[in-house]
Amino acid sequence: MAHPAVAVLESALRARKLDRTLTTTLPSWEWTDPASLLPMDVPLVDACLRGGLPRGQLSEFSGPGSCGRMTLLLQLMSAATQRGEIVALVDTCDRLDVASAAAAGVDLDRVLWVRGTSSGTRGPGSGIRDWGLGTAVDRALKALNLVLQAGGFSLVAIDLADVPPVRLRQIPFTTWPRVQRVIEGSDTACVLLTPEPLARSAGGLTLSLAGRSTWAGVSDRSRLLQGVDLRVRVVSPRKRIDGDVHVRAVTP
Image (cartoon, rainbow, N blue to C red; front, side, top):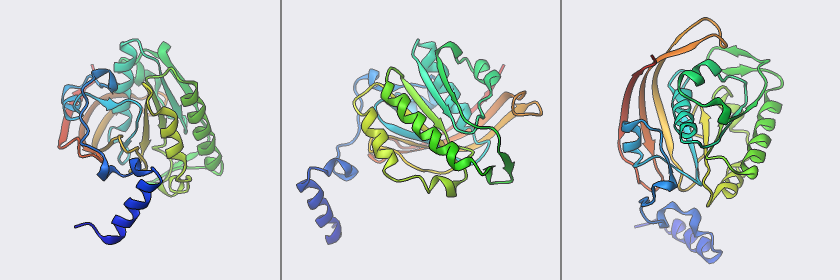
């Protein structure tokens, strides 16, 4: 039996027609239209996602450094651009390796790359240390909103993976509902890359990653992705998804 306080809250939300914010009141998520999904073209992952990421929803890829977040995003971008779709990446700390993106099969002519600042220095386990980091995050969020409002993208991602969690928790909680309102009902899937779970919409997914990527090269701009041992756990508020995926791949 539900706690009386929970029942009162749910009743108040329904009275104000805000009950759609309650995942417990929503039916089990079952997609019937493949066009409502954004597939990754990785059979194991797509099977776990039951077709792909939901369009018109905010999802996230979270996990520690070198866990495969960017690898998975590049695969998603590759699949979308190879289908002739347009994608966008808001690169908060300017960490995208173009050579790896091209090697992953991303059609760079179909990518809008919004570059942030790379002036910070990396500290052990702390992401980017820079007095201008707060400004970089604010600018990245503004860019995200502008890109989403422009429309026409099948995928819009924002890379916050190198931003310390303490800074991410300072982002106003109203930011993500506003993002969801912009993309709801559209063909756009919005994806956050974060070091830990941060936000998702009621119909979005959290892909919690653990794994190890193998790189060749000595600097951020000269490294090439060689392979990945990736473990993905999918978390869905509607319990549409169940299970873990283990993917091993080597880049030719």
